[in-house]
Length: 233
Image (cartoon, rainbow, N blue to C red; front, side, top):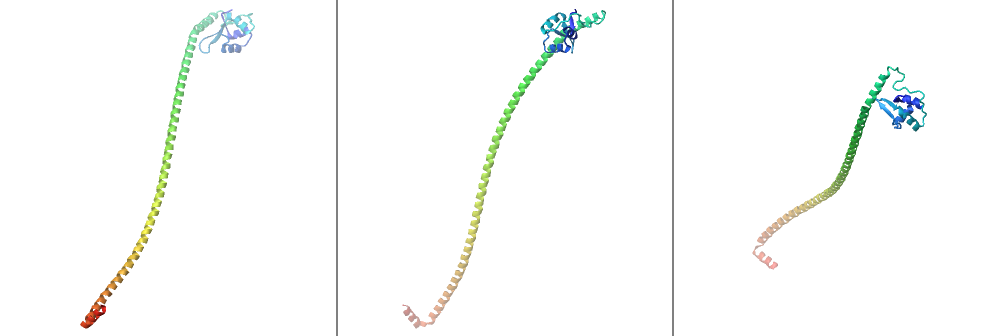
């Protein structure tokens, strides 16, 4: 029996399907399988591991016909070329594993970097949220202070308007009082003018009477003036 068999040949030996073997390998349940070649590559199983796999999986082991490995149906002349190809694929196995390992490390490093960026983003988001919350509280406090100032200004304006209304009313009352006072003064001035005219007239009458009296006294003569004096005495 050849050293390695393909999955298709192993499926014939185990009397199972190729998909079953492929699922076992994908699930990590068949560590004996070895992948050769780059890219998708090809899975091979060592012939010495076939019986152990059959015992573990409780599969039948049909070794009545040696499975064709690396193109067993090919002519004997083609076998060296097939073996050479298998050797080349096997030699590339380490580089494939190294490439996959490097890729895994790169992915792990990338995942670590993403985790760090995520943590940084979460911290920055938390800090931004805290700052935004603090800013909002500050804006709310400023808005409340502004509202109180506006209310105070409105109250002061209302008080000033009320005081101005009272001042206007008081000014109107003073104007009315002044008008009445002026009317009274005008009335009193008219009465005073009439009284002054009356006094002037009375004074003139008194002057006239005095002059008439002086003239009459003069006209009475000496005897008459003496008699008048005696009468007054």
